Image (cartoon, rainbow, N blue to C red):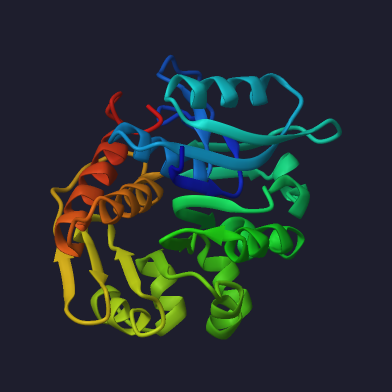
Length: 281
């Protein structure tokens, strides 16, 4: 049975502690869940009934067990290689501060990716595509994709600025869909989200730029569609990834770009709200 979405890239254990304050001992909620761009996207797709799988590399540790369990409970297939030397990657967010340890993900290699990725859509994370040490595996995922849509989630303004627009587009060559946030789109085009979307749509069949409280923009080479969202407080981690996953699934289901973007924005808002029903919640 062909999958709707195969998402490729860094697989992490996400730890979020919004109540943490420097110098204080607090009793506040701490959320631990499977994370990383491909995980957030696949979980979002699963929440809307899609069949999804995640391709990545984890350690041989309790974090890996938790990640596998989280994916299994959501009905997402875990195509995860096991690294016996490195720990699973970890992402920690507290009070607008972030610490990230790539862990086993920094050793993500071609052998960790199936020889052919057959699915309705294949999504590749920029976090692995734009790092030199994981470039080969990410490029293999793009070139081996047998899919209607091959998407790249830009994922890192810092890495885009380091490579420059031409370097980014060279690495993303073969992708038909690009999803970026406003800062990433600005680094690629020197334009604000709306015009940046139109500019990127000249290079990709579908371009989508998220703008936080400003909603999201998308274009398939003609009109630029803008979907607004109600302001939501909370961590933005995973929201754009959720949007990407549901956007791809919606397009696969035959929705026009406007309705597909509306459905994708709903998934992003759920992720922003921290709703337990949100992808990965």
